[in-house]
Length: 370
Image 1 (cartoon, rainbow, N blue to C red):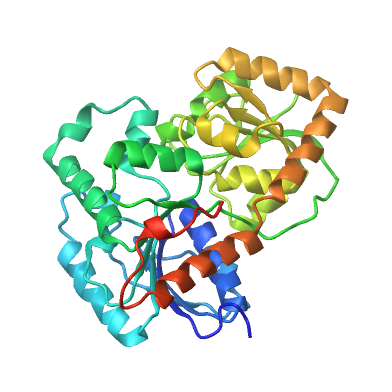
Image 2: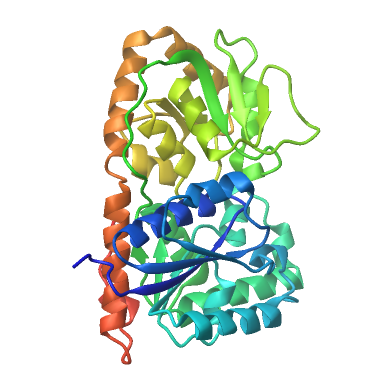
């Protein structure tokens, strides 16, 4: 019997960032293992190219148009979300409700819940050193809801140990969470690398720190391309590609010899994993998450120092041997973060919770599964 056989899962997701990529990969893998899984979107509906990520899978998709929690800090949409999701649970009758945002964990679910913390406003603000506005009443209410969610869910998960430590420091949840690294399906690098530096990130998101890369780019021998939503502040010296479909992103990664992430804040960094799996040499900001996941397989730099990034990139462009070594060890390290390993960890967690119903196990009884 398949490990996921006879498990019915209702999983919430959003389409704005990497959570969609994570959810599609995990849901597809769970469905392939035999689970009956329904993805329920909050926030903007999936684009056509995003829907393509679920083609040829047995994943069901339901779109709700409910607001995302960080877009609704005042909580105006909470009653609508509670009513609509309760109706969906009654209709789908899941064995597990897997939540990829905090607010919904405070609702009255019949099935045991797993809450995955992909990011939060408070940790984002701390990493960006921009916290003055967190004292506003609406963001205090947001903080209270996140803390309540971590206390009320049967199990909560972080995608890295570094982010787990941040979440426990900020919210001090009563129960111990688990760490399950994100994962992707294995792929073979094309081997046809070009003299190209590539990055991905939202220009308007201070945490992605794309401006530091833009400042470092002038004078480099190789072109620099950046994929992601852009605004009017585009700098010269960088080719701004705008938002790319997932397949187009993968094609760029297959061609680029170097991938850069200057982020101040990354709870995991799926784009970095995808770049390593595509055979890119990694140049990463020196933050705890990237040290945890890519120590020995990347070059690190101070994300506040564009001159240091320029020097690092210039030297790596000129160093064929060093670049080839980084490409090799980055790819080998990417195999650690496999979709099979992630799926197995979540299935084990689900089965622990189902087996303990109606006396739900506390997450302190569940081992860390990194």
